[in-house]
Length: 82
Image (cartoon, rainbow, N blue to C red; front, side, top):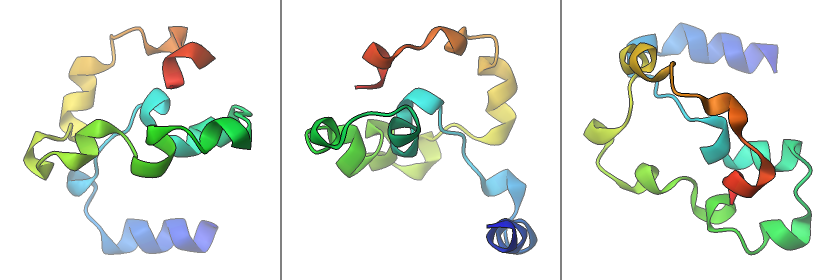
């Protein structure tokens, strides 16, 4: 894993990265213990967050994260991830 991270860091520009909130990240569903019978039915699992289907120019960029960091995103519960 560390080699993959190094490769990404060395071959990309951080300015080109986008942020994905935990509640919009399909990988986080598994780490939260969502059962596979539920995953099979989740659009998020199969398609990713809805904004990913939009033009890339509308995605949140790293410099915009400071503006949204005050949003209280720590009050997520499993009901919000579906």
